[in-house]
Image (cartoon, rainbow, N blue to C red):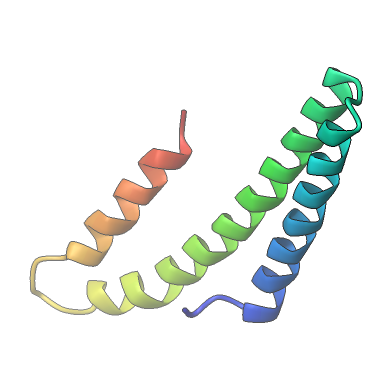
Length: 87
């Protein structure tokens, strides 16, 4: 992985903590909207982690692949991942 491992790990650890909190909220039968808001916040953190990884991939692996005259599976791979991000 070419992304900043410390930054990505930080995002993932925050998301893990949020998920633990959400499980606790569910066990306590907390208000649905509060749970939903925490789920949305966790999704946003995971999107940030994924964005960090994809940007690093494009800046390194895809950029290296573009410097050859051969067919470019790395570019197609990156584009397929981006399609998954766009609803």
